[in-house]
Amino acid sequence: MVVDRKESITKAAEETFASFGYKATTMDLVARVASVGKGTIYTFFKNKEELFYEIMNQFIQKVKKVATGAISPEDTFFENLHRALFSVLEFRKEHQLTIKLTQEIREIGTMQAKQALGDVEDAILDFLVDIIKEAEKKGDIKHCDPKVTAFVILKLYIALVFDWEQRHEPLSSKEIADLFELYLVRGLKK
Image (cartoon, rainbow, N blue to C red; front, top):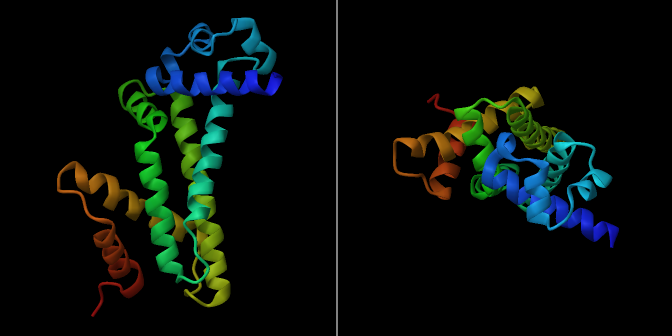
């Protein structure tokens, strides 16, 4: 019963943060959406920040699950990398909470929202570092700095998936994979 109540509070809080953003969400609002007294929330979370970070940690776990689920041992490093990144970025793009937090950062610059989305990006980078190290160990890729390589790969993907479509027709998954192969696998040098 206690777990169910905590779960219903976190679910209601996620909905509230996704609808109103971090700044406009209050414990009173979360209590109303969860159909509990505000005091009940405080039995599980000492403040709004703690509740928010619980939700963001759950979101990060979902992101990791999406990324891990996209990996197939029989596929090449680059096929797995593309599928994992595309899956994660599509998941993030469609998730209302990250959309609202991104909007809030743009409009208000809320530090908690910046930190939360930074934590999501760090989790994605950590995932990439791990698979880059594994690919290097197997001899699938050249020796490289895994942190820098993960950063470059993620930023390239974000540019191709999100930034490009701000001013152009969106690229298909295949077009993104082909460009990824061109820039990272083959390179532009003749």
